Amino acid sequence: MAEEKDLREEEGCTEEKCAGCEHADNCPSKMGPESFLEEQNQFSNIKNVIAVVSGKGGVGKSFVTGCLAVELARKGFKVGILDADITGPSIQKMFGLKGNATGSEEGIFPMETEGGIRVISVNMLLDDEETPVIWRGPVLASVVKQFWTDVIWGELDYLLVDLPPGTGDVPLTVFQSLPVDGVVIVTSPQSLVTMIVKKAYNMAVAMNVPVLGIVENYSYLECPDCGKKIHVFGDSMIESIAAAIGVPVLGKMPIRPELAALSDKGRFEEVQNDTLGEAIRVITEL
Image (cartoon, rainbow, N blue to C red; front, side):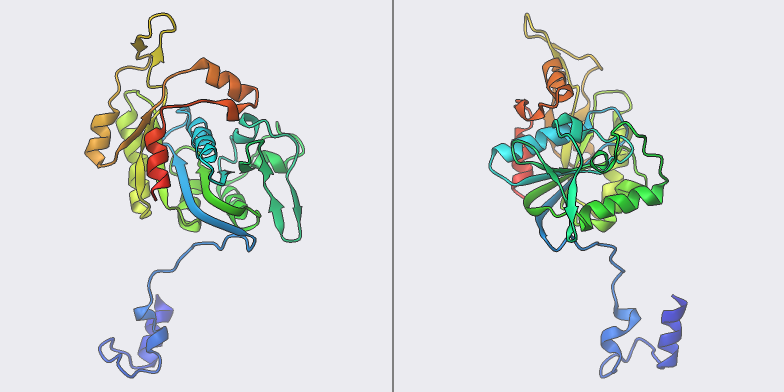
């Protein structure tokens, strides 16, 4: 700011006589705020970026990310998943991807599932997937940016970014560095839900990123004998919370042990989920 002021004073600028000034086009007083957006890899063409966020951990955010990716791919869209949860990656195992990512002088190639979903995760760059990632915030943020700038994604209709929980360095980096088109908030029906949702919502608003809606995971357990819905974590409050902040409910996902089993076996693309139809509709209408 001091440099901008010195430049204006040096040129005798009063910000009232811009007409005809030879420096008008580059005058600091006329420039907008600096953009931190990073350029995607030259061999990538990503049309839409959707961030999946949560205010706290343990709500099934990666599970929802995977479900959205599978459903979009089934509709014929070209889909990628950027696993930005660097210290707790799970996407690679969910989709049964083994080994390491490869690359060339142009960049890193994402791994591809049997259904054609392209995935990049930090485990693909480690010799041992059980090696803990003990890195400080700036290093984590740098890796996430490299997943955008250095990965050769090719043609994608949708890139889903699976963010770590909370409002720390990595979510901030994604919102500032990637052209995020919308945010899906994932939560669960617990008493902390109001605070959880509002934290995620307020961060998105502060970063000027539109919130597409909320998905409630672990919403209920359906009795296999009588079909009764059992609210294991208490009655849902998601409708009232969504109404209070002015966003739609995109889905209420039940607890289904068979889906968790498919995830553990790396067969996530076999998951059948009929509860995210509204979420898919909103995303595909962007």
